[in-house]
Length: 479
Ligand SMILES: Cc1cc2nc3c(=O)[nH]c(=O)nc-3n(C[C@H](O)[C@H](O)[C@H](O)COP(=O)(O)OP(=O)(O)OC[C@H]3O[C@@H](n4cnc5c(N)ncnc54)[C@H](O)[C@@H]3O)c2cc1C
Image 1 (cartoon, helix red, strand yellow):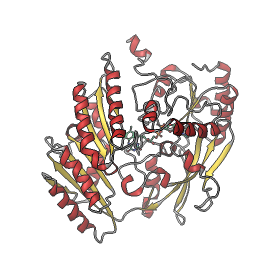
Image 2 (tube, protein in one colour):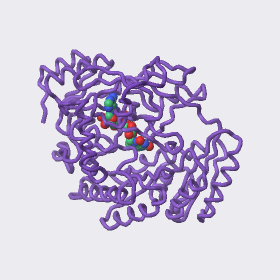
Image 3 (cartoon, helix red, strand yellow):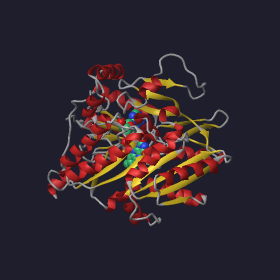
Image 4 (tube, helix red, strand yellow):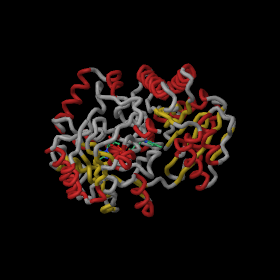
C-alpha cells in the first residue's frame, strides 16, 4: 500500500489548490471503485487539476516519490479500470471540462480531457454536426475515458468507435514529459511516423494522462426511421439481427433488450413497453430521406419472417427520443430489481447471439442468480447484467464466476472478451484466454516504452495482477 506523507499532500495542495486535493477518507469513498463495484479500495489521495500544467506538476511529484498514479475521468468504467489497487494518487481530469475551440470549416474541435461526451454534440448540433461515438453513459463519461477504452455505443454499428473519431491528443507521460500524438489542433488529418495516437487509444490509462483532445465532427444524419419490434422469444429477436445484416442493410443501430430489462424499464419509466414480451429489438435506419421508407419496409419484413408479435415504428421525433430513452436508461432501471449487479460486454459473431443468450440464461439459473440482458446486437456485443447482493456471503464470488464463464463462452464461440468496457482489473486474467503469451509480452513491452516503472494505473489489463474481489469496505464492517 502506498502512503502519501503530509508534506506531499501540502505540495499537491500548492499545485492544485485547497479544493483540488481530497485526502479525507469519508470523501475518498467516492473514489473507492468505478461502476464495477465488486472490487474496492481507497486511494491515498485524489487530485483534481485544472490545467495541463497542474497535471504535469502532480505527475512529476508522484514520479519523484515513486507513487502509483491512476488517471480517472468520471468513473463510469464497468471493469475496475480506475481501481487504486495499491492506493496511490488518483488524477481525476473531470475539471478539465472546457470546449476550447470548434473549427466548423474543417469539422473538428479541440476539447479538454474531462469534457463529457454528450457536450460535444450539444455544442455543434445547431450546425447539423455531431461527435459520433455515443456510449449509453454519454451525459457523464468523459472524452479521455472514451479514448482510454476506445468506447463505442448503440451507433457504433454504422459509425465506428472512438478511434475513428479522435484525431489527436496530448499525453502527460508518467515521467512528466508532454507529447502530442496524432493530428495537431491546427494541423491536417494525415500525420507521419508511427501511429502512436492509435497505440494509446484503448490503453486504459496505463500510458499517461490525456489533457486535450482534437475530435472529428461529422454531419448528423438528416433523417431517421426507428422501429421497435416485440418478439415472443429472445431466439427470434436475435436471429432477426443477423438476418437484417445478411440482407445488406446497415442500420445506424440495433439494440436488443430481454424480458427482465424491458420490465424493469417499463416499471421504472412507464413508457408503454409490453411486460410479457420475450424480447424487444430497436432498429434505427438513418441517412438521406430518400430510400429510408423502403429500407424500413425491408426491416419490418424481416421482423415478420422471424415471427414478430408487434411492430411499432416511431411516428415522430419525440417517439424516437422516447425509444432511445428506454434503451439508454436500462442500466439505471436495474436499481429497482437488485442491490448490486455486474455486467459483462463480451462479443460474439452476430450469428451466435441465440447460442450465447441461451448459455447466459442457463448458467445464471444453475447458480441461482437473476439476469437481464441488453445488447448492442448489431455488433454482437452482449451486456448480461447479473444480479447479486454483496451483503450475502459468497454472492460476490458466485456472480463473478458466472460472469467470467460467460466471457469464456464468448471467446469459445469465436468472439472476444470485451467490446467496449475495457479489461481493467475485472477481465485481466481473461486476457490469457484470448491472447498468447507472445501477444501479451508484445503489449507489455509497448507499455514499458511509455511507463518503464509500471506506476501508471498498475494491476490492470494483464493476467496475474493483484485483486480485491469480495473486499468489504470498512464502513460496512462497522455497520
Ligand atoms: C450506465 C452505463 C452505460 C455505459 N454504456 C457504455 C456504452 O454504451 N459504450 C461504452 O463503450 N461504454 C459504456 N459504458 C462504460 C463507460 O461509460 C465508458 O467506457 C467511458 O468511456 C468511461 O469514461 P469515464 O470518463 O467514466 O472514464 P473512467 O471510468 O473514469 O476511466 C476509464 C478509463 O479511462 C482512463 N482515463 C480516464 N481519464 C483519463 C485521462 N485523462 N487520461 C488517460 N486515461 C484516462 C482510466 O484510467 C480508465 O482506464 C457505460 C457505463 C455505464 C455506467
